[in-house]
Length: 403
Ligand code: ADP
Ligand code: MG
Image (cartoon, rainbow, N blue to C red; front, side):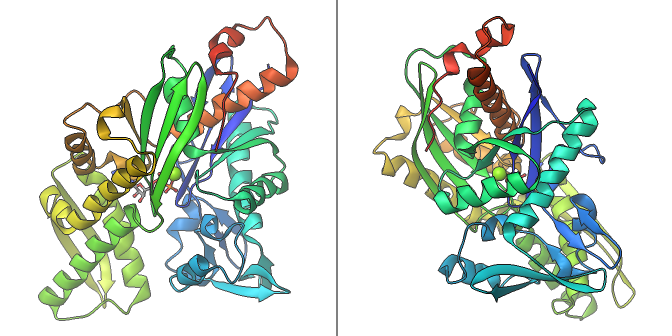
């Protein structure tokens, strides 16, 4: 059977997995990371995607595009978009009634649609796969949030087509995660799974039922502005105050200083998921002042306590929408990078009366993993070959329904 891929096209980070020889393999980028920033940057000489684009964002903020997923499939008069726009350093214009992003590239003004920006990220994912397997691969399943409407799904599919992918399906992230979870288990009685996804900028909770290989999204609730970047912002604010207190200088208006501080804060936050203390060291952060400081996990948890609690509000809403109580949930799956934060895990576990959270799948890989399985199922059903061992593995999953 041919190699197929599953792509988790995220707001903040994207990842890709392939399915071949009956199993899933996660693909790493050239920095050896399995998640790649969903950033595209335009410079005078080249176009950068991923880590390279994100790391130069401070110097080139007007031409560094991120959050394309918040734009895709939306119209200019969309109130959600209007609000998001206030926070973007790049320029969005009305071009003959269509929404375009305007950048300077190789000394020219260029206009791109959100689909085109997303297609550049998808191209990068495709290139990573092809470098890994050593031959062209184009069959792909791409994931979107369960709440995406038809226009957003279609635009995501178009992005895939522009990237030269054969988009087998656009599926919900929560269904993909449930598929990753259920794939190697034989589930014959109905099970209700709660998918808790806290990513870079969004928090989504879905309840998915699995019954005889049929997956169904029962409810989905979300907060589109609650995620890792908000936790980073709290850290930034704290260090801006500390800088002011120590040096009597306000760095908050200096975009470059803030960008550099933000990068350091995200690193410190990652450290705090595994250590009890993290350090920040930035040379010449402001007017030649080197900034050194530390932060404890306890302090990080305290300054984010209200945001962390908000994630539980979303959990309660997802339960309420489907009229379930927490006892009807059989298993809890964590997805998204921010779900690695120990305090968030503990709060969720406490909420479910100390029930263990499912740790069998990696939270930042589950979505791409499940999408790769879905891609394999579709290709198998199309080819109808009945001899592959793969078939046995996939038999219970012939009827994956999606919202
Ligand atoms: P997306 O929202 O695009 O789906 P992810 O699910 O990959 O993105 O989540 C990205 C967020 O997760 C970022 O804010 C990142 O800083 C955060 N993150 C990644 N790993 C960790 C970790 N070990 N601890 C805390 N936060 C993390
Ligand atoms: Mg995600």
